[in-house]
Length: 98
Image: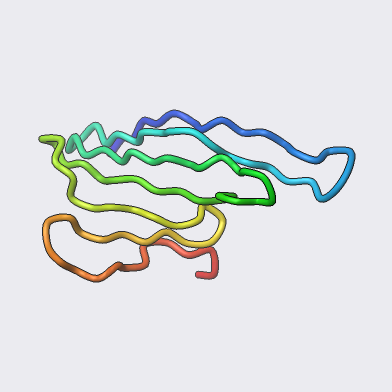
């Protein structure tokens, strides 16, 4: 399978004073060229006092463009998904711990 994607924006903050950090923000789309599925993710930009830092949310779309899963989490900790087709519980898709 072949995937294509674009990268979010990145900024390095507090390089001279305070605690330094890197913030990824913006929208990305990952496309599977074999089956047409897409993942659309939004990386939240860090606000004052760290509000929104590392937050990511998005959706998985099938080849017809219908939402099949909602995604939410933090790009440095974990990502959870919940089917939009059924009333299922959230499932852990990825964790930095494993």
